[in-house]
Image (cartoon, rainbow, N blue to C red; front, side, top):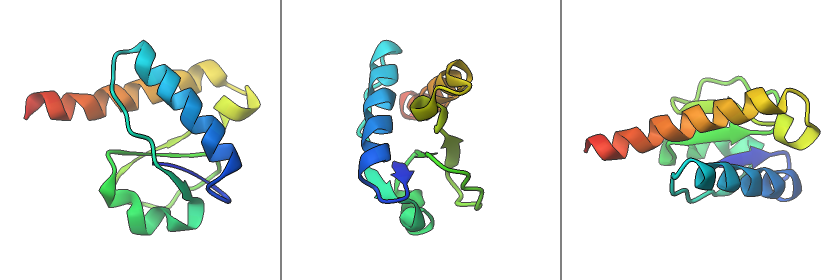
Length: 96
């Protein structure tokens, strides 16, 4: 899941970037866009929750802040965080 304020514009761009990163590392993803206020209710349905804002609530699901994909600030570090989260989630399925 990728969540932003409205679940439309910023999350759409971030979803495209996350999909590109996943493809680069050979991980299949299905990215669902959502409004930030719906994260607590929906997070358990996903392996990773990416957010474009300073969301810090404990949701019981891996949470990765990705606003750097939008702003370019610390973008390389954010890309590495995205890769790590995707690979961790993919490893769960390979272990099953």
